[in-house]
Length: 324
Image (cartoon, rainbow, N blue to C red):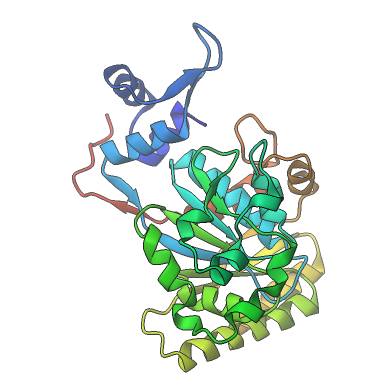
């Protein structure tokens, strides 16, 4: 849910105009109290407002990952997915490609049976439709393809398949259904990961202040570029680099930023995601730090909001109603 003020900022309308629209339509919203409580707009309601004002999220397949674990990639994927669904009413699909199944565990709806679920492993082993694997999550606008331990054997199933078409052929079935499709990848560069990288539209590779993460950054970009060349990918994904777990007070963070900025000056994103125990604690407790009503330091929130907005590129109509 988001507030009237937040909705107004996104839609370039005053809160008064938003309230007027809500009165004139059946757009989904609630009040936090019966009479005088704050008005909150539900995800479906925000999707309706976006459509009404002719604003549309650019449909993208997104990866937040590099070839190193422990960088907070899955956390960023979950936080931005949930925020995008609330803030913009975005329809999200999270494809969990990691046998550790952290995204699956976090997103799973009550009563979800991992044993009966269909992962990418069963999808390719039994040549199933992608729609047979998609399940709803505990977030209304977010679906997922789950993962489980068996997924670690998927390369035995797909070893002879072409990475260029491996995922693209399956994703054709859901083309136009979702605004954002996230691939939550393991840290290794397997055939499945390679197919996800070359099938994506936006790749964001995080790094922190360790030399190992910077080394992984070089390795990941080299591997992606090699795959793009090998398979002659014409519509190449946009590759960006993000400083995550950044602390401006730490010399190591500043030095890492300098090194990466010199090596990738046009790809390094101008904002950072700050190091924060609040983010870790919230996810461990089963919620996103950007969910409505949660308290989080402003500098931490700003970075996560900027990352969400960067992923959710908005196509705007020139005839959008002027601010009242």
